Amino acid sequence: MKIRRFKAILFLLLVMSLLAAACGGDDDADATTAAPSDDGDAAATTTAAPSDDGGAATTAAPSGEAVELRWFIGMGAGTDAPVIPLQQAIVDEFNATKPLGENISLKMEVVDADQAPTILQTQIAGGNPPDIVGPMGVRSAATFFGGWLDIAPYIESNNYDLSDFDPAFVDFWNIGGEQIGLPFGAFPQMVWYNSDHFDEAGLAYPPQEFGAPYVDADGNEKPWNVDTLRELGIVLSVDANGLTPADDGFDPNNQVQWGYCGTVQNEFRGLATMFGAGNFVAEDGKTFTFPEHWQDFAQWYHDLMWKDYVVPNPDFRESDLLANPSPLGSGNCSMMATHTWFQGWGTGELAFDSFDTAAIPAGPDGTITAKLHADTFAIPKSSAHPNEAFQVVGWMLGPEMAPQLAQVYGALPARISAQDAFVNDPANDAGFTWKVATDALAYPDIPSHEAWWPAYIESVDGLDSWWDPIVRNPDADIAAEIPKLEGILQPIYDRAEG
Image 1 (tube, helix red, strand yellow):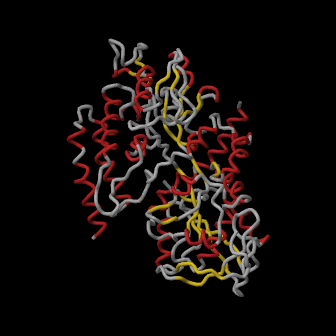
Image 2: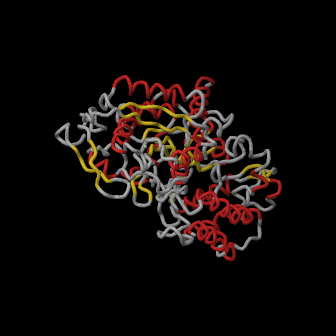
């Protein structure tokens, strides 16, 4: 057991670097293919011949010019000391084997994660952009919204095979109508539950198959949805006298266990996505909108906290009862909805046989949305070598290299063909059911809960300034609070537009 936990901790040491910041061709090998330039016009670029496995081409047409591509690391994972030599090994292998031809080489550039956005912005503004940036998640990519190359034409011109990816995962990286990256690594969301709590309450565990019903201890079925989650949460919430919110005499001021504790970050967009994907900005990119199902979520979640006592209020959540190392890991919370990176640090001292994972429940309209944290590698629009950069990214994320690279970052490979080997590797035994994670990839939030919106950081702060007082006020009138968010966010959008 100690060996398994040690491996899980090593696994998470790699993964947690992600959180510090915030995936064959023409018949002729010589064929020259037109690809769009930054201004939308066609520009002649040299295209490589396809490889046998349908990944990136193995031989680039000679251009007569040596091209050294810069790989910028710092917008996500990759800056921690143990990971740097593993990334360098990938670079060394590329330069030694020359899979895309003698004229293309690769250079790694690791920068401080806290300074990475500023450094990248400075390089781009100074006419010295890198050619490849990654790995990085949606939030990091959104900070440079509009600055990434649309690789859809390069996928087509290089005949890059996408059949090894879930189509929903490919669409996940189509942002604002542009395909900014290929799927690479995934950190899917699941319901993590304390099985000991369910056993003590005489409750059956939640289902591990997406779309399957919840089957109670007597064999009765009901939909696995947010209503059932609430019902279980009430039974699993307990005060110091062993009473639940359904019992007379329950004391919410002396509560010691909570049935559901939301997510780790508890940012509104991430929480509300259980009711369905959405965004606070309209398609025009400048007008505030408040999805109706997110308005419903706000009322549901506030009721869970202050009427049903299933969700801990902020004072409890920030207390020693739940804060260390996380609500679930404290042993005082029965369910959370969070990601694969949670294992190790988030589960704390819980034994592997004391917790497991289940499917995300359906929202009120029956739609299942498992919000996704994922990484990709993007190419700045201003790269001087976009086609070569695409070919290198295609090689990195191809059938041979992508599993190795995913292991470096502790990410579930986006390539379907690589997932079985990853989840069956004893080194990746993390105490939960990996099949739930792989199945969750079919239900991503599109648009992402971390998607772009105007003045990204200021808008996040504005949303928090609205939501935090609401969850701290047991008497908050949600219907009256809903319109106030427009008054906070629309001025931020207007300033960004102006």
